[in-house]
Length: 542
Image (cartoon, rainbow, N blue to C red):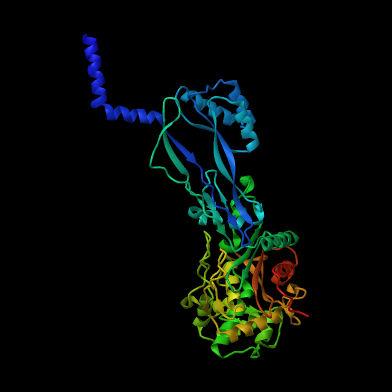
């Protein structure tokens, strides 16, 4: 009777005093959270072609509570997953330590569907599959520097994947349920989280144009035995980047050979002294002053110019030349004389108005600002060298943006890697007058198509081209290299009604063809002969 009384008391106590606690313990043992994984948003080109997509894969893991380290089937699974001996040893050691306790040990993440199906068919208790998503990049190395890549957990690490990681990342759905003794659903909880897939990101890139640019940059680097090459193509009216390529590149689907040097988006992260491609901005400064015009004559004799005890030199003595021919022949002496005749601050103001020395603000991590020296640090010689692209540095994108401003009737449009809405005009603001801009395009046309112009190899059949070459010795510790160059060409096409601007940079071309006119300009010509027809731009040359 005493025992019965004690049992009755215990039951009453459990139903009253301990009821809430015991209920919670029971819930903890019967409650399950079911997770539905969200897709990461796609990255698409301007026409909706996929540049990055997520594909379903399985990850294989084991629970030490249900499987022993000496299980022969576990050995078969690890061999099927092609785990190294070292990896197998580490897994088995962890399994022995956790034996008999519930836990979680990954065998391998993101396994191919074929292998995952084989393991699932083996039906080994304690070996489990967990559905995940793996990022896949259809164009591999062609778009790698723009799109970037994710880590094994689906987090953006570089490029657009990193820049828009929050937008691309979805939110997993969570559904909490409680099971009854038979394993059925007894009750659904009210704190469920709905599934939210990541949002898609539409880029301004045109996949066809991107491929063309990559193809010819790669060929240009190989043919010139160069260290690297880069190109960027901008729509002058919208600021949209239609292509942005670098070589050497890497495959984001397999990062085994993706060294930091190969992963660098040189168009945005590499700054260098641009050389003579900066002369048009010195010419703009002269035009703005009112002291110079297209036909203003400057004496460049005897082919060199003594400035502050140092010498500025031309390739040869060009004698008297007007501003058009100073740009055509790329005369250092002529452009230096113009700038040194003006207020020392004038060139600095022009360069900064065109965006040099500050980031463009494009949607990409790691963009460099470049450098423009302050006027109070200048003497006459540094100011002279600045007029032809030394004593400063910038990126290929900054150069493209500045030339696009000239091509767009003097109105600057911020560059973007995102597709702009056709219903909203691109933001723009005037930098120079339309009159000056048109004069510059006309003079730059002479550089390519005029007799004796330095960019004759940039000509494109059926299209008029305006542009400028640049060749500069690479800066090294203590001065400049004697046999290492940066070759640049910037082109505006078509010259009669500009639509795009393209910058081609060849880093350290070897051999005799090391200049902007001989190494970079031919790459531009090949590129544009395919890009312009693809864009549907009507030829303007008869």
